[in-house]
Each structure stands twice: as C-alpha cells, then as structure tokens.
Length: 453
Image (cartoon, rainbow, N blue to C red; front, side, top):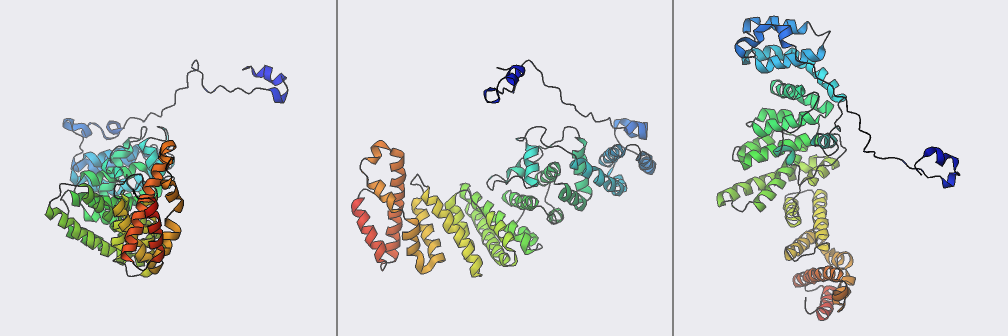
C-alpha cells in the first residue's frame, strides 16, 4: 500500500496515495545558525580600550579611536555600527555625544536593513516576538482587556542572532528619541517597541519623551503612552495636574484616544480596587470627570475612523461598567449625532449582555441601564423597541412549559433566566410609563402564566 511503484500500476481510481508525514527514523536536518562574529574592539582600538579592566577610551584619544573605527566602514559596516554602539554605551558620559551623531546616521540604515530581512517566526507563531510583530503589522488585533501586558511585561523580546541590536536600540532611544521613532515607524520592529515599553516601565517620567513618542504614526505606540501615564498616576508618581497639562499639548485626534484608554483603566481600577480610601476615590473621580469633558470636546474634531477608534478603546471587561462609561460620556457630548452613536453602542452592548445572561447577578442593574440608555436614544419609540426587538415571546412559552425542565434543563434554564429579566424589564417600564397600554397588557398576561418568576 505504501509502495508508490505498485500504486502507479493500478487504475487511477484504485490508487492509494500515502504520504509519510513523520518518520521517527529520519532525523531532521539541523537548522543553520548564523554565528555572529566577535566584536573587533581590541583589534581596531588596541589595548587602551581595556585599560584597568574597564571598557573606556581616554578623552584625548577619542577622536583617534572614532577615526580608526570609521576606517573599517568599507570592509565591515555592521562591525562599525556594533563597535560605535559599544563605544557610546561604555565610555564616559562626556564622550557619548561626540560619537552619537555619526553613530545614529549609520546605525539607522544598518538597523533598517536588518529589520527588513528579519524572520520573526523562527520560534513559532506563539512566541512573544512573532505575536508583537503581527500586531504591529496589522495582522492581529490587540485584546482591549490584555493590552496592558505589552507594558507590564516589557523587556522579554530578544533576537537570537542579532542580539546586539537590543543594546544599540536602547542607546538610540536615549540619544535621539526622534530618530528612534522614525526607525520604529519605518520597520515596525517588535524589539524596538519592547525597548520603548521597557524604558517607560523601568525609568522615571519624562514629558519630553512622551511628547516625542506621540509623534509616531503607530496606534499601539499611542496606547503605550496612555498606559504609561496611567501606571504612574496609579503608583502616585504623577499628579492629575501633570496628566491634564500633558494632554493639553496634544491634538484633539491624539488626545481623544489617550483620554478614552485612560477612562477605561480608571473605571476598571476603581471597580476592582476594594482598598481605596475616600481621598483616593475622590482623586480618581476628579480625573475621570475632567477626562470625560476632554473626550467629549475632542470627538467632534476627529474623523469618523478616529471617533470609532477612540470609542472602541473606551472599554471595560464588565458590561454594566462599560455601559455606565458610555452613558457618562454621552451626557458630556453636545453634538447629537455623536451622542447617538455612543448611546447606540451602550444599548447594543447591554442588550447582548441581557440576551446571553445565564446568571441572576447584576440583572436588575443591567435592566436599569438598558432602560436609561434606550429612553435617551429612542425617546417615545422605546416601547416599540422593547416589545418588537428585545422581548422574545417564544421564551415565555418555553419558560412556562412544565415538562421542559425535566428533559432539557439547559434550554429551560436559559428560557427561565430570559423570561425573568424580560418580566422585570416590562415591570420597570410600566411603572415609569403608566400610559403604556400594550406593555401593561402583556405584563398582566404573562404574570398569570408565570407566577413563580
């Protein structure tokens, strides 16, 4: 059966095609690894470089050392960039700037070529390096609930062959953030993004760095800045005043995204941090209200795509909290079209939450939020929306079926939970609108048929 010669002699319809996917007797060929040549420091600079066991070139010999390094540019461009990077990172502070301009000029071209030829899937598609590469190249979508891991777990991206790029990127970011961001925009390098995130995570606040970084064209770099500011405010290293002063220097398009992400993080933090004191809660509430005002004022100056992006990142993992966030924002928006867009997202989100609810937790809160958002969006047509598009009459029939619980418990339980919140919704709406005759009629009928709910 496995012999291809025998199978070729048989009629086409009777042939059996058998491919060997794996054979334990055949060992896979070892992957060729590019060995990085040793750094030619001693050969190019002589014994002075390692004087007293310390990598340092005396100030008076620095011009000669740089000239000697540049003399090898024609033979070994990569080696020159590596040596200059080593020289900048190990010599005394006064000599770093003397080398910086030439180093950045040549390293930019060298690193851009390296990144263009880099293969990021060598460690598998589940490796952090490949995931970040796919994200930066729009081949993946970031989780709104998990984006903070790119900041909180920064410093874990390394290149196996070109490991030396890590230190040179850090040096480039320190010497000239503008050049670093230009290279990051051009290459969308996962290593550069990780170096930037690690700089924000492990070092102190720098407003000038944040303003430089926000000149980038990458969405996730902007979000990284918002995460940086939030973490500093959370840790007490940045005041509300500093945040607002920094945001005031941004354009409405970039400030809207910063404010939206910041509001999401505040909502989640206050909701889950049960040990906050009264002073801490008041501080967060003040910043929350000010950011809502900023976001509401900036949205009219954004394009439709920019508005959708900002509203997409206005998110909380708990649906009721997200609806509260959207309702709070809608109260600050003066433009009726934008306000209706926000309210529509609130209505759709809380409606889906109610439809798929399997537990009683927060059901009453969700019903209240739906009624509040629906009445603001639909006005006098709210009853029509409830009776025609939300309430499922078949669900009432299933919940009232006496034997359904015995032979299909899951189906009955889902119908029971939905019937329960639907009756609660009709009851609350009828209580506020005594003139709603249709609602009162259906409520009375199903109350009789479902007395135990």
